[in-house]
Image (tube, rainbow, N blue to C red; front, side):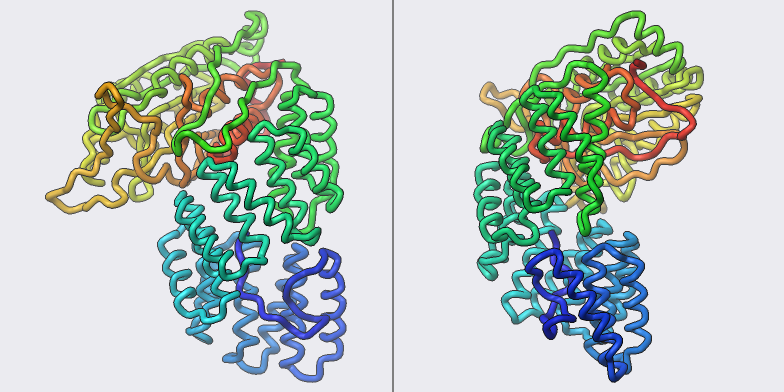
Length: 610
């Protein structure tokens, strides 16, 4: 939860500032409307319009808010005043949160910086937009400048909170928790900072410390705005830990504060699923889909509904539901999680035959790279690939090619051969497990013989993802690439100029002297992807995240796919939503798979038809 442009207290009635209740927003809008109608000067009118717009933005009434903000900017008597400057801050917030147009928002803030160049608020807000845009270097530069300019402790706490959020987005969870701690020291009564730090601890795998901070946040919310979300987040932590009764209690408490809070209903459904009470789970998921959209809760409510919809489809299919083990209060490793042993699914021959008749010819290339020669050896990709091959054969794929520990030459040969198979197929699927990196905006898969000393070497040693996409382009209906390779970039600090210094990650020696590691991480994961046509690309972890390895024989992502792939009658987008949710459950939210691209609406695609 980021702090917006630093809010300053306004006169009672038409103002911004802390809310005592959600309903107070309506009172503020009414008070500001009266102030607008009774304004005696352009300056008073501009302020009243700006304050009403801020209340409308908090109600998610974006169109009305931008009308007020544009009018406030037009009537402002001075283009150098702090009031005119404030309007720019809130217009940037509109572009950020209502339209997702970060460049427009940043352009507005550049104008604001020219008006009051030493006001820290503009750099704080621009840091938020740069973070959302994905330009973390610019975000850190802005937030550090904001911190340097601030003298007031409450504003300084806000800036440290926002820098911590940037660091968390970058995967720097320990540094993020440290900055949240500074914010808490400066503003010890702010519940949001405890909630945020609890989230950072969760992402390190320390559920014990996460729970402590969530307890404190709920105590400080004292039943006010935010408590329903705080209780829901604590309920999720308790569910991850296997404390199901307490999780149910927290979700129910949240609903007593906000009876139409979809995330709490979805939380109840997921908990009943864990308990094996599928009828109760379905009831809660149906309720999550029926409640109205919460004001100011758009993103989290939308995600909760998507989860509820996918879980209902899976439960109604009659297929066995996956097993997910409770997590320890403290992770044994920062790079892995416990995973169960899974078997390839069993599909009745008649069902597989009927699916093949409906879906057409389906071909797959499965690659698993474990035995790296110049970077860290991976334990599970070979086994992940073998398990995925068996799963695809079980659901009726006509042509499944398995390749393990392939060099670059063999990878090129495998893709060239598979391209011919894809040309004859309705579906073409590539599954890859192993190291993957992003360099200069291009994603690459890493063969086992790659020698990567500088970023230039990737051009000669690695396989661009675009080449994989080209290999499946001939498929008539569906093109699908699944990457359990959202790994770190070893070139982040490498010198691009010769003579290069070696930067390949060394393998960690095990007790017997052999190379071993529990991570597939090399730097900072795969980059965001733009997908065109009837194609899907599924990352095991969202761009910018790194995927965890399993402490068992397979990664948590591979386990989720194998357990879900034979669910009958669940369309492919919903199926990968189920995979996403299963991985989130199995990792306490430390890893979030992500799907890029879309499929034409004229036809649904199923791994297994009903």
